[in-house]
Image (cartoon, rainbow, N blue to C red):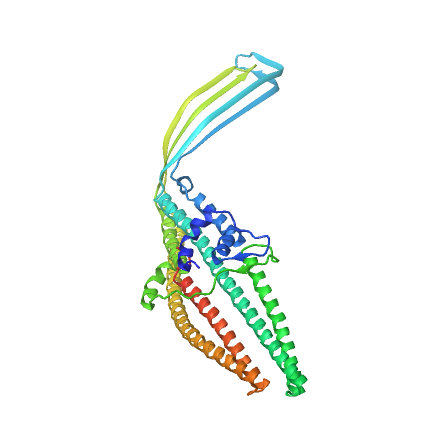
Length: 439
């Protein structure tokens, strides 16, 4: 199996370079294939990716207010009226169906030159929102990868569990054959033979139950990687524990890499920018305005039969707020309080992260110790079972003694299986806390 950390570091390249790995029938499935498929198809990731793209598109100079505005307008109006006019000279005009028309068009140009530095604050805000969208996308990637890893290794755990129960069934069937043969020869008791049948049937039931559990875990993984739930597969990897960081290194790097902490830091930065944006309303606003105008009017009656205007207009405008009921001052004060709240939330998040880091580290170390102990136990249980089988064949122990050895071996196998999975889950969680699942 490839080194897991290298898989995590390279999955982004694979994600954009290769098509989704889809399986229409039972086959081998590696952890890397499961992650690639999940990253291509998981709906939460696709939604987060779209939101990140929206934030990226919004991060533009025009949206921040740096660029000018240019528009073209045109309008025409036609009329047919009855005109009655009497002039001071005594002359009169009385006409019906007098037609008139007007046409106006202009090109308007407006550019804000100074707005109290609001456009610069808006640019920084949009940039942070762009980063926030990227962080949320990475968080969804991280959460999905973590869930896929745990679900994948759970399939391995349950596969091992099924193999163990099948092995116990095989041992029970072998013991039943021996007790039946001894009973037929008169050297064994009916009680031992019946007890062996009960144990064999219990082992069959255990195999069926474990097979259902395995199918359920496979369905869970298929759901995470957006495959049809009925697709069958066999995991091709095994559970290997390889993450061995030092606690002091984790304490130093987790506050820098953890995506939750990074998001809280962004929220704090956004709250500080909000103060600048609101405060910009206290400064004057200077704008340059220009227009190119064409206007023509035609009348069939009246003193002015034709009028036409063509030319440039330009100038500057300035506005300065003097008093607005202290609203800006109150808004700034509220923004400062919001920034203080964001800073407190960041400090609280760091405290929680450090506590979670210590707990996860201690849990990981303990699980590694338990795993090491269970590896020793399984060897002892396997040797004990081998000796018990040999003694049972020689007739020096009864079936109850052999059954006890079998149960001890099964329990040791299950404990090892669970210890390996628990240690792997702890490893994955510790990597997530330290921001090592994605780079």
